Length: 117
Image (cartoon, rainbow, N blue to C red; front, side):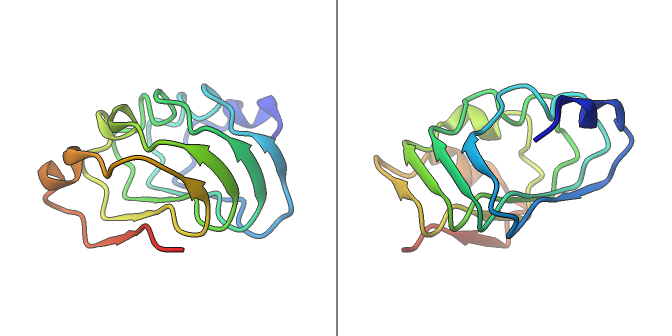
């Protein structure tokens, strides 16, 4: 994912779904997108862990999809600290482990959560 994308800070939707992108998820690329509401990273070849500060600054985020990648590790509750207004979250079909963060119970707008294989 090119760093130059961060110059487009007024984007509301970013869809990288099903593009065969690979590598680790950038920890700070999306921090400047203060207006971002939907982020689709599903169906790629992203690997490694999801950085705890991944959603820092994304206070308007409603949809976040990581499904169908090769992500490992745990789902850190810090991912949701700034994004409690999420309505849809997708982690399915990865290689994640550990417990489900208790922060989900505080996300009163959450309508769809996908954690299955």
